[in-house]
Figure: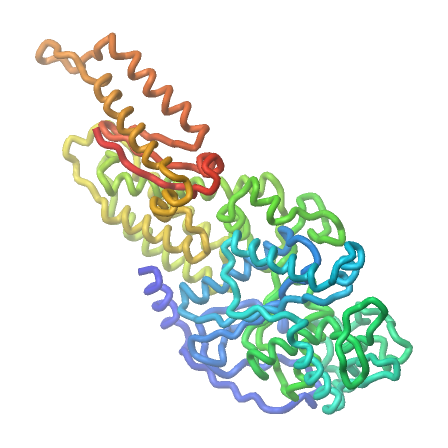
Length: 563
């Protein structure tokens, strides 16, 4: 149903086809962005090439080609990496699962680099061993964070022949030159003022470098070999690829001369992405290689102006983080800020994310209990709730179509939770009052499904998975809750009294049983077993604490025990 809302939204946008003629070649003397030809998705996204939101237009209907810069694998991945990859994973999920766009995603693994070589020398092992070890660790971290793997990972070391051919063509087109020392540099002067598409055209971060450079801004496409370094043969002598050329080569080998979306951290805009654009457009002799550049904001430790990074030694590894937090909590943490904004990491920000998840989970469980007849409430305003649900769907879709505005979408979802909670006011008896389970079932299903779009799956029924991971714990909790419900019902039995009296007294000798039942409920809560008494019925669910105790059980596993 929620996807129908997205489709309706797209029909309301200005047409599905946008035709824009793209003429010219790399001889153009300006940096003007040209609106692509193709399929208008109805979404807008902030394009770093224009510094403003632009309609997201894809070359092929229903298909987005997407390239992202992968990790340099010389150490453990940290939360700064996680933040960028999770944020773009959320964007790709929104495109594919809400707006029906299939994302073809390719990522390069930088497995040869100065830092990898240095780490190998320090540990007296081959740089390739260092790279393979941390590559596998990175991939496991991404799985732990529920990041969907790209369609293909490509290693730099397995694409060196393609890189050499790519450089040769750039030289042949007159946009690069080899030095007598065996280096190859991109000739920035050869492209005129086209350099600086991201608004930064100062000196390259590579510094002055070789005296053989024509321009201090020229950057290396090929580096001559040095002692104790891995190297490959080339027309210019033994060496290895420069930093930027790997991404242009790999992206072009997968997607050709035209790319819809390129993503990465904001720190990569210059010089990395600037140089990618220059060499790719020189290679393809095209006017516009990548149509959209999406950059994610940095993650900071709260109180620090510096980004989290390995070089600054101010990082938390993904593995260490996941020892005390869940992937769902981190994804919610990312959802609460815009993907291109800087984000502060702290105990309080993680507490906010955890609280948001808990509020949604509690409402979902209560709504499910109401639908099943386990929660008795006064008559609800179902017409109002149906209207709120429809409006929430529209608001969420509109927010996500506007540069993937997840904070605005989450505000709409939390408002729906609030409106539902206002109607779910438990009472001891309703004396046959009318019920409206359908609207609460629809609201719970929508919340579950939209969180699934975001990669948060804690609201799904995990009975089968929990049985596989934690043995018979759910069955034990079920039997315990059922036994407690029977004891509690016995203790709550009222004595017969004189006809006409409004209240009936409990049996005094049974009160200790009732007190013991209540104490058991309180004692189990800190252990992750949450029991809720609902008249003659009790429900239970396993929370995060139980997950930790059972080494892997997922939250929100709920069951019902009847009298």
